[in-house]
Amino acid sequence: MANQVIKCKAAVAWEAGKPLSIEEIEVAPPKAHEVRIKIIATAVCHTDAYNLSGADPEGCFPVILEHEGAGIVESVGEGVTKLKAGDTVIPLYIPQCGECKFCLNPKTNLCQKIRVTQGKGLMPDGTSRFTCKGKTILHYMGTSTFSEYTVVADISVAKIDPLAPLDKFCLLGCGISTGYGAAVNTAKVEPGSVCAIFGLGGVGLAVIMGCKVAGASQIIGVDINKDKFAGAKEFGATECVNPQDFSKPIQEVLIEMTDGGVDYSFECIGNVKVMRAALEACHKGWGVSVVVVVAASGEEIATRPFQLVTGRTWKGTAFGGWKSVESVPKLVSEYMSKKIKVDEFVTHSLSFDEINKAFELMHSGKSIRTVVKI
Image (tube, rainbow, N blue to C red; front, side, top):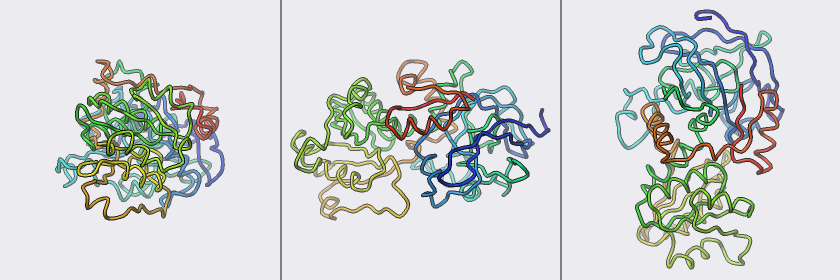
């Protein structure tokens, strides 16, 4: 089917606040420096639910969502030299062109080569490769993995080990990589550190895993859902606390538990009040708090400047600080050598027709990650 339009199934978000609709769509062949991928499996992430709700200021409809997917290259466009048909790949919502000043700076992974068009739901040339019922369908985060076939920029693809199980490794497209990298790249947790993780969903568990790999001696999970505590301990938490069990603010509780505060804290919920608590739970003089999950549009963070003047640092992370194209294959290798967990994040597996159920499981807190087999 190279150089031809492919007809396939996709889950289309026609408008905000409505369930996804499984439709037959047309996927155009890749243009120059583009890759068409047959998606094998994809997960469901809170970011997609945020966009679907209509709260995302960049949200545009109709659109094909999702950015945690994995598949096989079907065909490549002109000028693509590093990928070929048959390669096993993970699409990336943060590209790595290797040429812009962001890619050339070791301090960041935020490649800006195609940021403007990606934010508009378009390919780098300003057009879409998707149509349905005669209407143009937009791309999402440069990936759109809720489709049997998708087209992405060649700088937004990581080639991985063909032996990697794609129904697990699709999670490296966002959640696991983000949380794990927040600990080992952004915070740079050291051996013997004391850490607190606020929010014990998939991203929070990945942070816990990163803290454990980095050698933290005390890893405290914080969540109001006690049903998540057992899982957090399996990933490496040494203890867990529920803020609702205390009459005082959770930051005061953690300061008392840790003789002055934690060395590193991570906010994995997207709640600005919790972001403040996470910062204020840090130790005076050197504590670092990392915002891992974005808050709703228009929200602002606040604390007393004294918290920063006395030596605490507030940081943020995107995709865990990984330079995507070069780093994702290394994460696959770490899994293959059993350094990191991946399988354990998958709690449910559904068919493509059950995709709306995956969102229900996520909203109910019953799943860590649900994988949809395309």
